[in-house]
Length: 338
Image 1 (cartoon, rainbow, N blue to C red):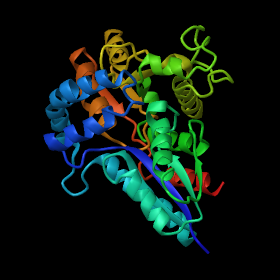
Image 2 (cartoon, rainbow, N blue to C red; image 1 turned 120 degrees about the vertical axis):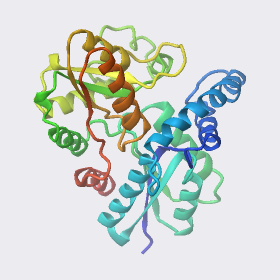
Image 3 (cartoon, rainbow, N blue to C red; image 1 turned 45 degrees about the vertical axis):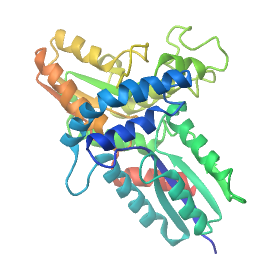
Image 4 (cartoon, rainbow, N blue to C red; image 1 turned 180 degrees about the vertical axis):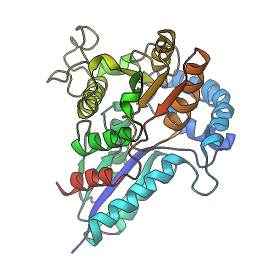
């Protein structure tokens, strides 16, 4: 019998921490019209004329600080582990491939391997818990562009999001328990940011997003596809799992790029406010990521940690991502089999 195909897709990482490879990665990533959704001419000028040339050297230095000589990028390292562990769980009946939306291993190469193996169907799991056009939507589009050129194709199914997956929530909660959450003055749920205009585009009613008070705070039929609303829901489920009272945690958004308004509140501002209030110890979750990466290992631990200490704080502790946790592999296996 032919095998069933599974394709795990994460965002991507440079092939090396060299300036040339980081610039190459930034150009491919930021030239995606779903990521920087502006006029194509303006996007080209911004990315190729400004962002890649200036941010390339700076980002390369950051990648060099988290790069391991043997395993390379943390994101790629943990993604490969997730692929291998899931393959072991599923057995010979399945063929599990890994791809990155940008750079290597490419989506096209992974799909080609599945096609050449004559799999009977392909289940695609974009490794983004909360749906966003710039992440999951971009994966959808790329895959369909490739497969549309095939003379024939197997059945293809997509996981839209898994922001409320019980085993994922359990994994984050278990990881937090290692750090004794009650010993921290405040807890942050810091999600990757998005421009506000992208949230508004996702509101098919054109009358709810950023117009209703607390529009993202409770998941409902109107905002069920909203990245911010799904993020709030994920945070609340983790907080409930750990019995964290509402007044002791804040939901915020990091990694802002450019001057346009992004989803708020910004993590950097919350960190500063908490330091000014006299808080000394912060515990930070990053539940938009299934594997530790530059945004978790460096941005939270180093950048926000240094900012917090400079303002009088003492310690910022990152809750490890899902990485190769057995409970997270349980979650992936259940997604595939069900």
